[in-house]
Image 1 (cartoon, rainbow, N blue to C red):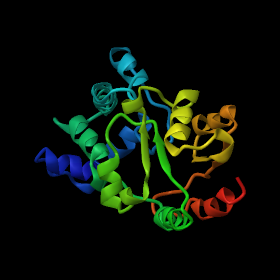
Image 2 (image 1 turned 90 degrees about the horizontal axis):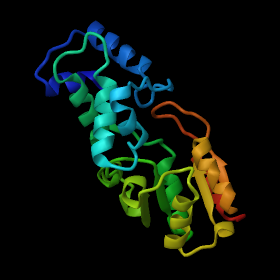
Image 3 (image 1 turned 135 degrees about the vertical axis):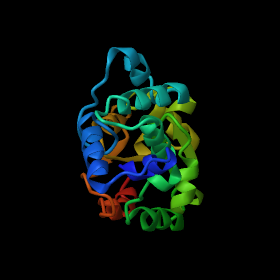
Length: 209
């Protein structure tokens, strides 16, 4: 969770044990990647509900969540949010780029459809695959989120394909909502940072659409 990076940004030196304690406490609150449900308080509940529709709400929601961390130093919540949005704070699955390159070689257009409240293009550039994405359908830009059908419909429009000609690749039940439009959907299993996630199967699946 990069607690050390947040501490460095705030000018705070943390012993390793305290960084671990803060990271565990933040994870228990439902921080990104923890797998835990978010503990949302009333004062930022509306921002949390709209976090993927607005950059302002996204910041308020995640800073509010991190602010609940017991024993946190001054600037912790803001530092964790900045790290969340920083390209350096992200790691791509190792089968991401090979899969995208295989699709590009086969002349298959690619749209990245994401529920996100900030611009992830710099993240993709830092990770080395921005040039392999043809269209970006980011929820805060198109003002709708998965599982709403409109966001999948927008992806098909930009790709210039019919829903039954597309394949949605995702990792959540919100992604599976694409099936409501007749889009075939492949849900990936959970994988830890640096582990293959099953993307290598995608090119063969696309060829069957």
